[in-house]
Structure formats: C-alpha cells, structure tokens
Length: 249
Picture 1: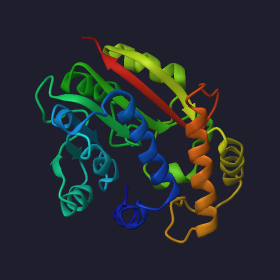
Picture 2: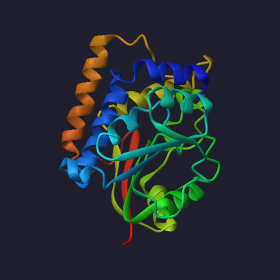
Picture 3: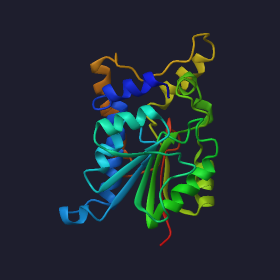
C-alpha cells in the first residue's frame, strides 16, 4: 500500500466497518481454538503476517504472545507506536525458526504484488507453525471482481476456492474450512467493478475517512449478520475468501 493508505488505516481502523468486521472474524477464530483462562493465555504464541498498522495484533495480544511481520517501513512504524513486537520480514522468507507459533493470521496480504510467489508464502507459514497449529486466512476472492480498488492497493490476485485449497494442501496443510465471505455485498461490488471498466477515472481506494457514519453503521451490521450465518453454512460466492487450515500433528 501507499504511505497514505497506511495513515488512513491507522486513523480509522477502530471504527471503520471493514476493520471492525475483521476483528470479529479473528475473535471467532480465537474463541473456537484458543480462548481459555488467564493461566492458559501464556501458552499460545501468534504471528500476524503482513500486520499493517496493528489491528489484528491488538486482538491476538489479548489471548497470547503476539508478534507481527511486515515488509513496509510504515507498518513497522505504526505497530511499534502501539507497542507491538514487529520484525521487518517477508512472508516468503519469514525470519523465525521452524515450529514457532500456535497460529498464524493472514488478512488481506497474499493478494499483494509484493507476494510474488504465494505458494512459497504458504510453505513458510507451514514451516513456522507448530504441529497442530493453524493458519487463519482472509483475502480477496474471485478474479471477476478485480477492479480499481485492487490496483490502488497494489493487488495482483483474487482467489477461487479451488485455487486456494490446492495451494494450502500443496504446502502441507489439512484444510478444515474454506468459504467465500461477504456474500451480502457481492451484488453491489460486482456491479460497481463492472461499471468501473467503462470509466476513465484513475484507480482509487474504497477505504475512506469520509464515509457517512450511518452507512458505516449499516455495513457493520451487515458484516455482523453474515458472521452469524457463517455458523451454519458456507457461501457459494463472496467478495472475500476465508480459510482455516491445520498443520498435521
């Protein structure tokens, strides 16, 4: 991302619907596999790859020992401002030893052009996970949704379920769940991305400090409602894709 995007994320991620929703997803993952009493908290070690400005680390650090990596100086700066332990490191060459973490999170990282070899990235995450450890993965879905927002964020790929499953399994993971996500927003986003192709306007991020607070509240509720539905089913399409995969014991 550009420096401006990091600054914007840092300012709004505590209240912007997209980041609020991601926090809820991470909480759900932790609750299912890693929540416990205070004495258990110190047992768990987490790594957030592509940690950005630290929104996911703020959740992980409540439930264990959390560290982050990112290649961007801006990300390292903002995370350290918040007191998090960060290494400047590439997901394709993670600067930690084998079998170091109980869980690794990756939210909106692998779509980026900086991850030139995403298969190598999955293999590195597999390597640093302890046996039985899990990856929690959320990223962009469906190449048909590629648009100017992706270009603005230096995105080069969007995953299908088939492709993501194959790459996780090739890295050695057992895929426990994989589903598209943000199905309720899919029709609007699909239409917007198609109309963009008819426009000569330059690429622009859809994340903004100026979002109407009423719209932001509505979208937050939509995200939360879909999170409730996720308990009962997988979705056939969506703006994003979510996966949980385990390293064999």
